Amino acid sequence: MIIESPLELIFRDLFYRLRGFAGGNDVFLKLEGFNVTGSIKVKTAIALVEDLERRGIAKPNETVMIESSSGNLGHALSLVCAIKGYEFICVTDPNANRAAIKSIELYGGRVIVVEDRDSVGGFLGTRLQKIDRLLQENPNAVWLNQYANVANKNAHAEQTADEIAREFERVDWAFVGTGTTGTFGGVSERLRQEFPGIKVVAVEPKGSVTFGGKPGKRNIPGIGTSVRPRLADLAKPDRIVAIDEARTVEACLSFVRDHHLLVGGSTGSVLAAVQELATEFMAGDTIVAISPDLGEKYLDTIYDPTWVEAFIRTSQPIPALATEGPSNSLRQFRDANHLPSQIQPSTLIGSNGNGTGNGNGNGTRNGNGNGNGNGNGHKHPGYGAAGE
Image (cartoon, rainbow, N blue to C red; front, top):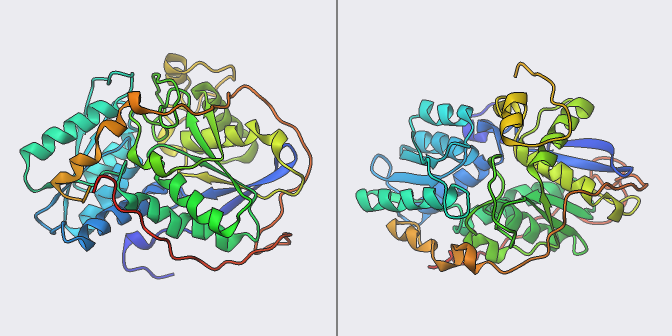
C-alpha cells in the first residue's frame, strides 16, 4: 500500500469479532481507532471542510476554520486544515483529552479552552458562545458546525454505513454512540435501505440531552451533549439506551481484560448498551457495534484509578496502569431548536440490566454467514443544510 497523503489512512473493513459477547451471540465491533488521527472523526473532518470548498466558501491561506470539539474531531480537523492550507481554531473544554490538544497544536491549530459550565452542567453551550464571539471578531472565520451541517451525516451514510453493508449479508442490530448524531443519522439511514428489518440503537450517556434525557454533569468526552444538536431532528433511533458513566468505565476495563484491547469511553458505552439489550437478541442475529476510537489517549482519565475515584463512581476495582450555509452565517444553525427547553421527551432505557441468551452471530460477507443481501451502495439524497 503506497499513499500520497495521510488522509488516505482510513481502514474501512476492520471488524473485531467478539465471540459470545452478548448472551451467547457474536458481536462485530467496527474499529475506527486505527484511522489517521485515531478516530472515526477523520471522515467527518474531511467531509465538513470539503463541503465548504464545494460551496466556494473556503479559501486556502485566508479562511479560518472554527469548530467546537472535545478532542477527536478537533484533532482530525487540525490535520485536514494543515494539509489544505487553512488556519484552524478548536474551542474545547477541560474534559478534552490532553493528547488531542497537543496533537492539534502540533499540526498548527490553535486551542481555546472554556472553563465555565453552561446552564445544564455541560460545556457545549459555553463553547458555542465562544464561537459566536470569534465569528464576530474575525470576518474570515467560518464555523464548520458539526451539530447541524448535514455533510457530517452524509459522510457516514456514504462511508461508515456502506463499509458495514459491504461486509455483511445481513445485519439485525447496529449500535452507535451519539453526540452530534452525525454518525448515527448517516449509519441508520443507509443501513435501513440495505437491511429493512434492522434495529438501530442510539447510545448516549446519562446526563445527555440529545434524545430528551435529563441534563446532568458528564466527565467522559466524545459522547452525549448538553445542547441538543440540530442534526438530532433527522435521527430516528429504534431504541435509545442511556448508560451511566460508571458503567462505561467498567465496560472499558472488562474489555481490556477479556478482549485485550484498550477502547475509548464512547466504545465502552456502546459495548455496555449491547449487553444491556442482550436478552432481546435472537439466536443467529448479526450484531454490529461501532467503536469510534481506541483507549490510549484516555490512560490518564478512564483508565486512571485516581481520576475515576475523583470523577466517576464505579463498583469495579481499577487496575493501576502505567497508563445554514457554511459561512459566517453558520452561526444561524444554532437557534432555539438547540436549547434544552425545546427537547421532545423520549423513552430511555436504564443501564442496570444484564442479559443472557443463546445463539451465534452470523452473516459476514467474507465468512460462513447466513442470510441474504448484497453489497451494492446507494446514492443518498442529501438534506438541505439546517436553517439554510
